[in-house]
Length: 155
Image (cartoon, rainbow, N blue to C red; front, side):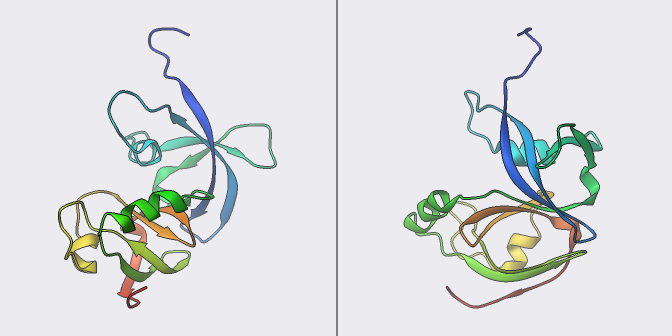
């Protein structure tokens, strides 16, 4: 491997496009380096307009426009959400309506050290993607694809 190459791993995901079309397949994310990071968020926030995606029923990599991704879901991240719950961070349970899909019962968590954030605080952060959990699955939601949001009550 050359010095410029970055080690990557294949990560199975479900991408929902802004028109509501779900597609299953894999993203290729950088392996964790010495600093903690979220490789999916890093990939989604890259400045290039397209990202490589391998459809589940395909052998050829396709390119997807980042601007048309409403959300990305990982198969099972229950352990990570359990760690957030144990840390004492109360989730904001909400329903988000994007351009193509309605996500019900999404748990959004405040930033560490900011326990009393409301939904408006979470939605008004500067990050292009919200990260939440739904049915034990980690979900990245493109903030500018959200049309409406409301709190759904405590879990």
